[in-house]
Length: 236
Image (cartoon, helix red, strand yellow):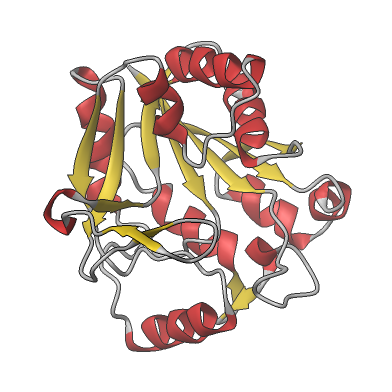
């Protein structure tokens, strides 16, 4: 099976307080999305990459140094994303070559993906429609109503937090996302679309260092992780 990568960098940075796309926010000497791509290009068998960017940023990135770096790292295409994350992912999947059978979809705002975990995710596609990297829930979770009243306390032993990259069989995920769009259903991660169709998805244990940079506190933590070399799976 030929494998591809869709690197999703089409969001904005409102919660981060950034004046630009958060994937372009500097971490050390380079933007967040380059940290992610620098790692994932070392996943064995990954042959093709599409980077999905915010439409407002696309031309400037293509014509600038960042676009040159992305192409040098193996990006096949830089394309504009859609209104929602699931729209951007669908556009990225459709932009890959027709012979790509399995795909990783990664949020560029997660700068520390683990290559070994990503490799296991792709391997899982031999038996499953999709695979999702997860970490245990370590705090007690409360389900509340719209007025803030606690309704229940789920058993956290069976709960996991989903991360990216998520892996899927490309054509099946395209069909699942098209089905969700036709039903006007928002999905918050990729394999959720597969779950809605009853397709089998397997969980793979991930590292907590593979967190998403969403707030200023997250960015400060990422800077500390980078400076101290705490995250495993760094590219050579």
